[in-house]
Amino acid sequence: MFEVAPELVALLVAAAFAAGFVDSIAGGGGLIALPVMLLAGATPVQALGTNKLQGTFGAATAALAYGRAGHVDLWSQRWSALIAFVASICGAALITILPTDGVRGFLPWLLIAIAGFFALRPGLSDLDRTPRMAATTFMVTAVPLIAFYDGLLGPGTGSFFMLAFVFLAGQGILKATAHTKLLNLASNLGALLLFAVLGDIWWMTGLVMAVAQIGGARLGASLAMKAGARLIKPLLIGVSLVLALRLMWAG
Image (cartoon, rainbow, N blue to C red; front, side, top):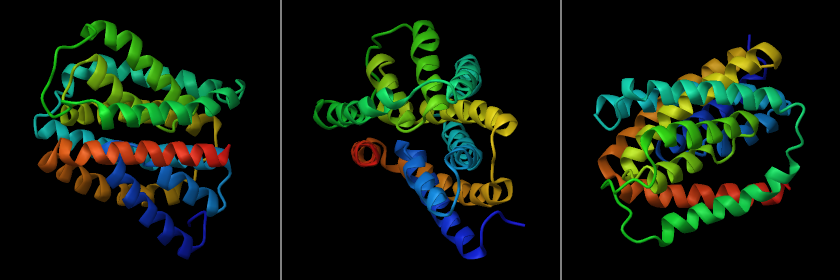
């Protein structure tokens, strides 16, 4: 029934719950789920595709939770989500033909810079500020660029969306988290669609992991909405730094 042994399914379910929890608050759930899937015997393509499958459910759960609480108007963001969906498909389509080593080498330093921004910049809170970019400009520049990267590679996408929403769109940290989850959902769906057509996905294992993702995402989103920037900011900084170190180690 499952693509792996039962004891490995239990390990993957635990990893998916932890990934859903972390991802719903600060992004970076793939940092937890992907290595465990590789250790369980998945090929890189299987791990990427299965991660998109189970991560889609976690992102959807978090996006709905933030939407119901009024932190994001899901309908008003439909065009941004559509752009992220299409851009992610384009990124996933190019992953097999474009060299990505140079991008991977640059990513750790970019993530460290993001962690430094959130750690050292004063005044970052749940309060909105004056945006540096018009909403339409943001939608047609920052959104497709980050979503394209999510389809192409993926690590750090949540951190990049968070930085864009806070620094360019002027959103408070909790509001930025809510908007990030919606666009993460759209970009996950885009990449998943392409991997489903061209790739090799662990469907049964991924769907069981998805149930755990939903549980972790519900818990994480609930805590994030209660604590706001006090929880999201340090977790975002920590996830960005850990992901940077892992990419350096892998490189």
